[in-house]
Length: 299
Image (cartoon, rainbow, N blue to C red; front, side):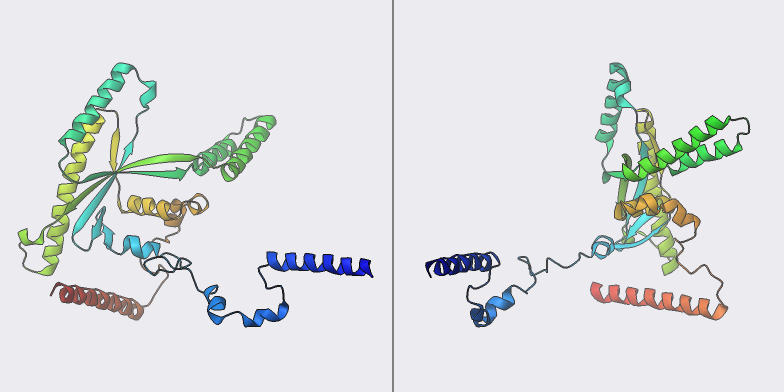
């Protein structure tokens, strides 16, 4: 009888410990008596101090690109007529130079920084190293070569396969360097007969000013062995594509997307005239509604 009692007590202790670990009441019939507020509190989504649901996905594109009006004329244009021109900078291999050469580069760069009196920003972007083009060149050279020995061909194939696997398994990074020149055009200083002429003058004035700033930086940095290249519309879109698709950009390259004409604003398939006119009419209505909304907000 004692043994049965001891075993019952020991079993109840194990049961109580298990219920405690599961955060459940020891007595099963007590589960239904838990207050409603306690039950619902576990199902509520967590919120921060501003009342934003923490489990909600952030609207990255809407938050970061809501102020951008368009990317055109090799510039990023905002709704308040602020324009941004981007230029890529080829770096110099600084640590392979002598002390005198390094000192000359430092002095030139510092002199350029001291001369800047306008809004200029540096943007560094880390990208995965893309070996697709070098691998393709190696493969093409190996195919075009007719005098290669069989062992050389086999070695070339194994090398290409190893490089392809290495790029997928252990990706490496490279840093791209960009200079961003920003300028806001004041429409009060521009005289125009109609809205279309005003738009043209705004864009021309912005590009002339930003291009002048870029050329000044280009001439100064060339003395420091750094080449500056203007980014076109496609180059700006590629920078944004790598910024928002960091991992996918290795497999889904922007160059391939452009070659497949997937960057077009309109459908590239053959369409009849009626459908084209409907699309244009819809775009015109959208622009008109946007302008009316801006006028109402301005009032």
